[in-house]
Length: 128
Length: 397
Image (cartoon, rainbow over all chains, first blue to last red; front, side, top):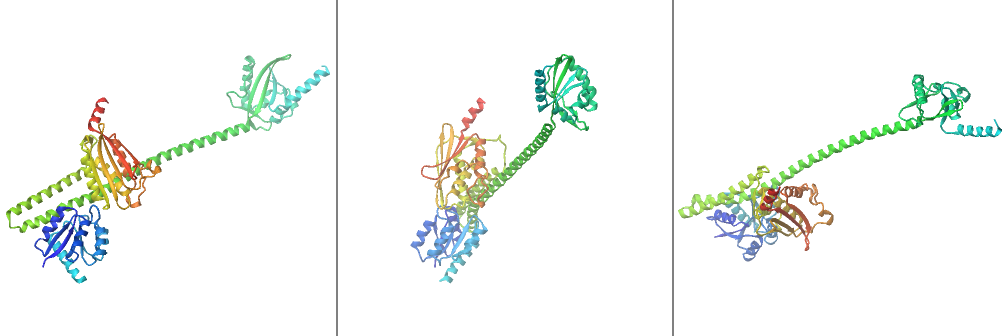
């Protein structure tokens, strides 16, 4: 059975990289280039998104706004934060959010990304 | 003598005795012929004791000989002389005490020969006051010199501190820049990593080729970023100015600003017009735009917009940076370019950003100003002379 990962990142190259790394895993990738697009995709697929992989710095709504929105509307959907801007304080803030299960920094290798996304998606099952 | 003359003499004597100055009349041989009461009191004698005495009785003994010469001189060339002119004179009291005096001399021909009328004023008090004044003056001068030295030192100290803080601010700016650049490098690095991973297990040669080209493109991106970074690291000299396209600098600065500033809620738009090149260091022009844009973003609480526009203006390049923030109060408008002026919190810098901006702009003979836009928000206008304007000015110089 295919699972779904929603990737939220403003850079097409990064979205492609995530798609490449998740190729061959049991996750199918849905892409959103901004938070509003992600919100629309979630509204269309309320149940089938198993995990959200979200960037932090994006034009318009940021990853922080996004995580807060996801927590409010989809509290059981786990989020993996993936940022190119490693910042300990930011990581700590994110990890305090109930729906954030991990904080990764770019570049991340395939094995780690797949393992993290897998673990996050299984955590979702635990929530349910 | 008639009683009438007696009466008049008495009147004159009374007047002379009442004079506030001592008066003594000395004959050609130096004998005292007349002394008024004031003079007698001044020197501690009774009038009768003075009459017929040599006038030197009133002088310190070592002055007596000189005095006699003076009297002879004066008798040869009698001219009225103002009191105390040119010399410090001393009288000697009966008890031996000496005191400073001023003496006025006037010679007169009498029936019994030539006489000299000397008017004597005790100037002890005046001398003391003068002395005190002089002391105060000396102290004051010393004080002024001391204060001037302190001021100059504190001015130098202030300049040193300002210079240090400017360096620190530059380092902070470099820090912001580096983390922004880190972000820019991490993204293509991530893409390279993911592509290389895929390449390693890809069976299709055509797909491998495509992955290879992808990796190449991102490696070139990173190389370009690093090249830009190393330009920041080299201070360079004033002589290696290059032709700079301001639009490219604006694009670079805004790209950095979007990445480096926590301003996800602020949209930064560029409206680039055709502009002539300027003669400058590209990284400094970029720093100017970056600082002004950063300032604009920080001025916005919550969400908003920053518009960066470039246009040509008679051989010059104009860059306007307008924000949708609250604008600047009339009082602060005058001060935004002052060093250490900031309306931001303590964590947001020392207030040197716009000061540094103005320093750089001025160095390139450009101008910078700020006003409040009609629709609210602040508008900064930076103008750089185009390369041709600078070259023409150079030819005329």
